[in-house]
Image (cartoon, rainbow, N blue to C red; front, side, top):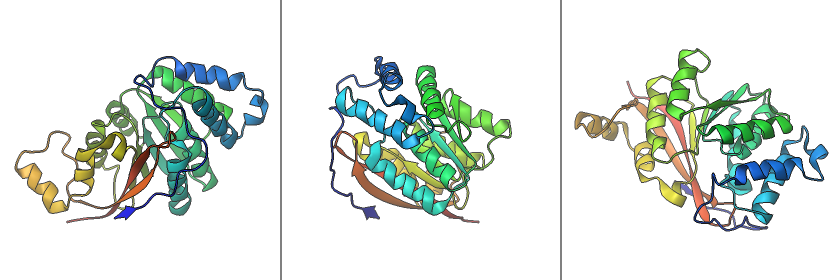
Length: 263
């Protein structure tokens, strides 16, 4: 099913350059925010921190955030479904952690895990999450996504995921979802939200979450699937939800619900 996008309106981010991240702009964002004349009003106010991040993206340099348009789709989903535990793969500068962490707190949720491989990005996330007053909800975990998932599981910290947000290295979307399946972190009721399924796109992930149990089992039998193997018995219902990048470029989210397990 495809849910069509609303019209893009308002001011867009700066255009995406050839090199658009990890060139110092993330630390520059911190200096921009902590030198902002409205800094005191941001303390304990997630929306004002998000507004400041957007201001930087609109007036200084592009930031590869989910942005206000697609994030509204996810925050509405959080308010509707009321998850207890959210895991984010790929935190970047904390935009989604702040937006979704606030929504999680508003519905009485327990913990938001933001997994980020880059330690500098993770430090930016932690600083802005603290500024927004969400440190009691958002836990930043530094390291490769698959290793962090396994470590949290082995520590007994993570035993179930209500909502999984994938926004990291695109080829890892499918393998990390399968890892969560194998560990039993995904079960009936789990919702997976994948960003950037149009820009830049992720055909292998879309094929996997849209496949039937029979199709997934067939690939395993044919040896077409690499480790992790996942749990092919999970039944998914997936929706393609159109939206916009903060730069005004069309994109979409794939929202996938686990609706059962075939015995």
